[in-house]
Length: 185
Ligand code: PRP
Image 1 (cartoon, rainbow, N blue to C red):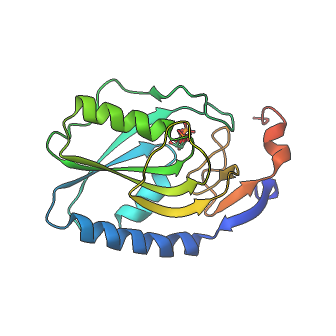
Image 2 (spheres, rainbow, N blue to C red):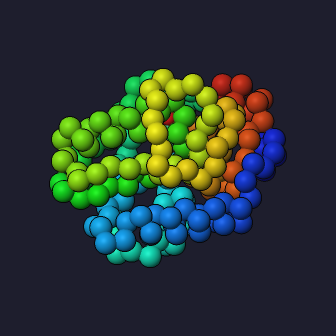
């Protein structure tokens, strides 16, 4: 697996140090408010686990399973919700967690649906990575771990074709790995 990585972008300790800062900011901002976190699966699993354990608040945790990449390196543009119902967040302050903001389609679709159908008191967005690029739909993230270039990254929850999520760091995949269409099983 390590042979497929061109270079490391963020080591585990660098990520965790940044999560300390993000968690401290979120704790300050939501003190006195009833916080509900909605984690966008699967990519945010590791981010969620490490960030939430650093937040010093009695938050509620929900999740949504949404996908738009379906194995490739570019968004299909079609955001699919894997469940029909949304978490019950009526009147609650919602923080949506996702691993990466790329085209903006996923987080815009989730926020649109929550606002239209779930009557939250507020909705904010927290991403570990934000790609610096023009987006299909612009989106202001309220909390950002790291700004990165327009490269295909894997690890710490991020996948290519459902693999590499379990790398403990974030790295750039060698182009030849994703240019050869499918990985062998
Ligand atoms: C990825 C990633 C984000 C989204 C970001 O999810 O986890 O949720 O795409 O891309 P966007 O800003 O271009 O919409 P993916 O569809 O690959 O599902 P996954 O979380 O299961 O990996």
